[in-house]
Image (cartoon, rainbow, N blue to C red):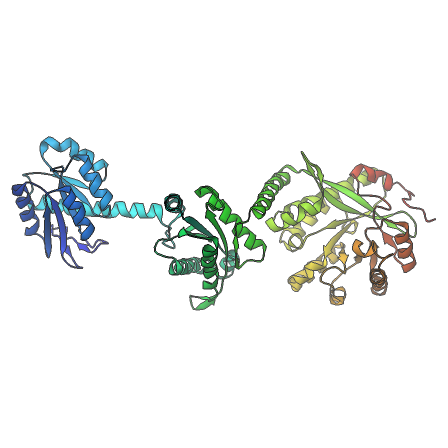
Length: 586
C-alpha cells in the first residue's frame, strides 16, 4: 500500500519503509529499559528506519519543530508532563504527525481518553510484539492520513484547492484579531469573474471548471505567503490581505489582480479571455468585524459591476447605502410579483380629427402596501436587470386582455390597447405561446393589441427581432416604436421591419413651442410617418399650444395630461361609451 506521505506498507508482512528517505520515529520515554525494547522492536522490520529518543516533553517539542517525523511514540508519564496534557501539547506543536501512546495497564483509561483528543493508537508496555508494534504505527499513520483528508475536504475547495468559505471565515477572524493587536489593518478583496455564466454556457461546464482552476492559480501567484486566497462560491473568490498599512496599499494589490487577467487562459486548445471585478474593504476603516468586512467588500465589488465591470472599487459608505436600498427594493419587488401587487392604469389616445378615443395605453403601477402607487420608472429597470420583467410583462398582457373581454361584455366599443414590451420579454421563448394563450382564453382578437417597443431593441440580434416582429404581423398584432428619435434611430429599421406606429417622444413635444430644433424634429417625424404610411402618436401633450402645433403639422393622434392622466380601469367605461368625445376642437 502506497500512502500519500510516501510510506510503503506490505500488508502481508508488517514493514515500515519510506521511499523518500529514512523513516524517522520519535520516541518519548524516560525509562531506558522500555525505550530499548521499543527501539529494538521497531528496528527489526524497518528499512532505513531511525529512532530518535528523548526523555522529556520539552525536548520532544523541540525535536518535532526541528525535524520531520513519520510517527511519535510517547509515554504518558514524563518528568515534565503527565496524562492527557502530554498528547494535547504534542498535537498542538505538530498536528500533522500521528501520535501513539505507550502506557501500562494501569493507565489504560487515560490512554483511551487520549484517543478522543487526537492520539491515533496506544500500546501496552512490556507487550510490544514486533507485528503489533509495526501494525500500530502503520494503522496510526493510515488513520491520521484519513483524518487529514477529511479535515482538508472540510476546509478546502475541491475544485480549485483554495480555502473554502468555512476556512475563509475562520482565517478572516484570526487576521482581524492579529491586526488589532499589531495596530495594522486587515484588507479584503472580493473578486467576481465577469460574465462567467456566459462563458460557461458558451463553452460548457468542463471549460468553466478549468477556467475557475486557472483563476485560482493566478490568485495564488500574486498572493503573499501570509495572505489567504479562497473560493467562496461559484465564480466568487476572496483574498485576505494580512497586515495592510493603508487603503492605497490594498488598492494597488487589487489593481494587480485586475491586470493579472489581461492575458487569456489557454484551455482545451483555445484562448479564453475573462476579466474580474474587485471590491476592496478594510478593518477598521470600513468595518469592525469579519461579517461587516465581507459585506463592505461585496458592496464595493457590486459598484464595479454597475460601472461596467473589469475594475477596482474601494468601499464607499454612500454607495453601500444605495446598494442596501436597491437590495431592499428588489426584495420588495420579488414579493410584489408573487403577490400580484400591480395594477393597470390607462391613458387615452385621442383622434384629433374626431375628438374620440383612438386607443388606450396600458401603464403598470405598483400598489405598494405602505408607499401607495409607485410609478414604473422606479421599478421596471430593476426588474429588467434581475430577469423578472418577463413574468410581470406576461401578467400585464393577460390583464389587458381580461379587461378588453369585460368591456365587450358591457357593450362598450372595441378599442386597441398599447402595451409596453421589454426586449427580454419580446425575445423570450415563451412570449408568443403566452400571447396566443391570452388571446384564446379571453376571446380577444390580435388586432385589439398593440405592442410598444423602444429603439434600443434594434441594437440586439436583428435576425431574431425580424423573425419575431414578422410573426406578430402575421398574427395581426400591430407594433409601435415608443420614444422615437431618442435611441437607436435609423431609417433602416423602418424600412426593414414591420412597424405600424411611431410615437413622438414627449421630450420633443413639450419643448416644440420653445425650441426650434425640437419643433422641426417633431414635424419631421410626423412627415416621415405620413410618407411611410405609419400612424404617428404624439406623447406628453400638456398645453393647448402644443396641440395646435401638432394639428397644423398633420399629427392625427395625441395623448397626455391635456386630455387625461392615466386612470384606473373604472374610468375607461365612460371613455368607451358610443359617440363619447374626450376633446372638442375650439
